[in-house]
Length: 228
Image (tube, rainbow, N blue to C red; front, side, top):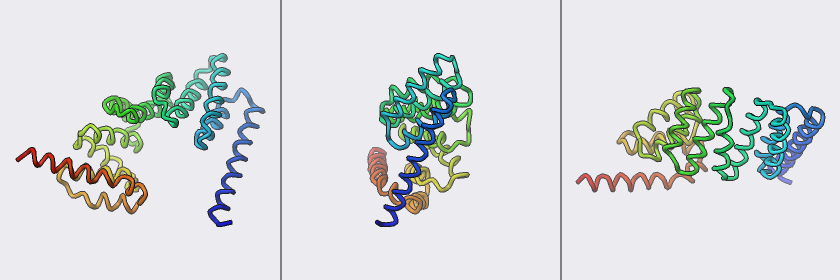
C-alpha cells in the first residue's frame, strides 16, 4: 500500500470517528442544536447529501417546535448549503432568505450571491455581494464573488477594485490573481505577472481556466476590429 493510500485510509478512519462522536453527542444532548449543525456540515463536506438533508430537516422539526430562532437560523443555513452543493440553487436561495440572525447575515448574503452566480444572474449576485460587503468589507470570499460577477457583466474597472482589495491582504489566491490578469488584459495593463502568479500557486486551476485567456484575446480582437 502506497503512502497516499495509507494517508487516505487514516483520513477515512478519523472522519468515521468524528461522525461517530457527533452522533453520540446528539444522543447525549438532543437539545444542543450545534451538534446537529456540525454533523450536517460534516456530512455535506463528505458529499453525503441525502443524509445531511435528512438530518437538517429532522433537526429543524425539533427546534421549530421549541421556537428556538437561533437554532432554526443556523439549521436553515446548513440546509441551504446542502442544496447549494447539489446545484438546487432555487431551494438554497429559499433557505438563505429565511435567515434573520445578525451573526449569519453576511454569510447568508454571500451564499445568496454565489447561488445567483451559479444561475448566471450576475446582477442579483452583485446586489447581494454588496450587501454582504457592507457587513464585512475585507472578506476575500465576498470581494471575490463581487469581482467575478462584475467581470461576467463586463464591468472590468469595477471588478479590478475588488480584486485589488483582496490581493492587498491575500496575494496567495490563484483565482484572484488569474481574474485580475484577465481584467488587466482588457484594460490594457501589464497582465502577465498576475497569470504567472496564478499558475505557480495552483497549476490545476490555471490549466482549467486557461481557455478564458484566449476568450479574452478574441474579445479584444473583435473590439479592435469594430473600432477601425
